[in-house]
Length: 154
Image (cartoon, rainbow, N blue to C red; front, side, top):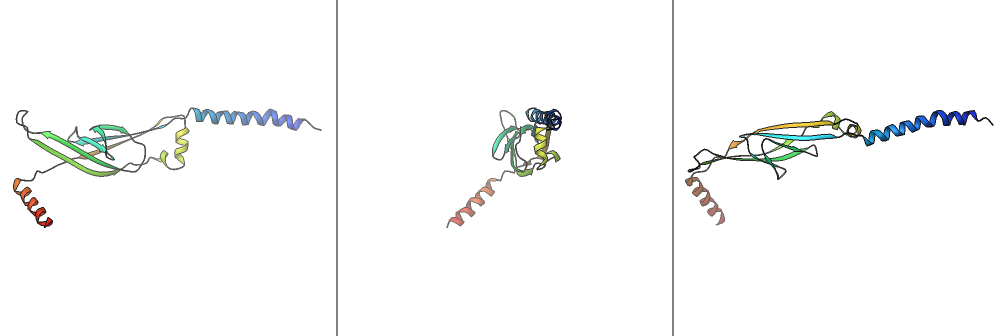
């Protein structure tokens, strides 16, 4: 019986397999992560930001996001164009949808390797919006609308 072949297997192949397994385990333990942030900037600034019906702060606002897809965005602002003693407010409003863009390292299949790489990847997206001024209807317009609603009830 020749013992050279099993000894060669034990001496050469087993350490290589052990080193590969240890290296893979080390990569999994020291894996980096993908940091996903979204910054929303508006004009006028200091607008209330609602992302998927959750208030996230005032613009400019930076928030982490978890999924790539379409987000429902509501932006509201109130500005005083009068004096502190005699305020006159102007309202701004925007309701829209926006889709996050998936970078190449977040494509399906590649994202697994991006999560275990020992580096930190950052995906920072910036969305900018111009809010439209909401026009206030005159008293006559409000009365006309009320009359139309009364007529519909009858």
